[in-house]
Length: 347
Ligand code: ADP
Ligand code: MG
Image (tube, rainbow, N blue to C red):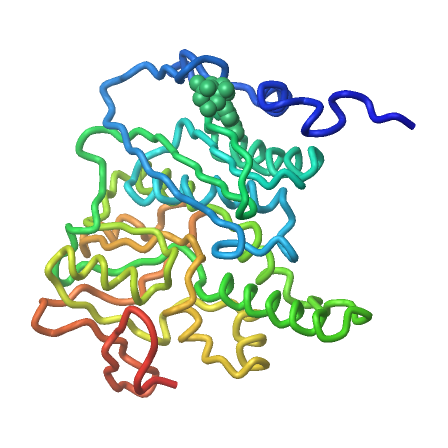
């Protein structure tokens, strides 16, 4: 049967493709005055401050299409951006999506990618207001910019932590890293013996954390609801260790993290043991958890007690004066200096 014009990318052309993809999106914010379809988007300004963040995702560097479903990739590409907006204590409102794609990619594949983007736009209440499209000689490239707003005075930087502040994290750590280890292991097994089906059973949570993470919208909403403003905040993209070091460096402080307090899911521990990895090292150095790491005063921590929320918040340590350094207190009580990556004397 002859292929209909419109069934393929070349048939649609660039303008046709954008029109086709954007037809699935609806703008939700009244401030989005002009979205896709003109030379630039137009957004009405309000009294809030604006927050802008960008992330670039490259095939072979940030994702591997042999085991990443395109729908999940689109979803995750949005999540990593809105997570940065939440880490400023702001709410995401609009995104732009720029795509570089090989001429071999199918229309169905691009549709899958945009379906993931659309689902994330629904979940996080953001408008897709523009982007750019080009062919690429180096595989798939996705660049997303997110725009958000925050009430003046509510923004939270990395540099406000004070000695004695509690260090809190919004969920368990190390699972996304273990999910990646599992996918890479099964990819190697498959490469060695294509007849063998990958064995991913029993680790659904780890795969979900790696392939389809969520951003901690509910934490920012909860903090707002109880009137607590963290003294500092960051999202965990590179691992707990490197993120707390960013906070301490910018705040001019030290810290104490307690190994036993670091939340680690059961599946993370089981797979880590199976693969001979220390699960605490996975939590400290793994990354891609997209949990929020923040510090709050002791008085504000009291406001958490008894407050109703869907957000999980774990206190895992406290800020110390700079001269105390940045350390992990192990289960046996010894102090290990935190490093951005790698461990000399741990586990
Ligand atoms: P220009 O030539 O001015 O760059 P384009 O033809 O690239 O215009 O884009 C036309 C419209 O489509 C613009 O509103 C642009 O923001 C939007 N757009 C282009 N590519 C994408 C994309 N990949 N995703 C979403 N919107 C896009
Ligand atoms: Mg363009």
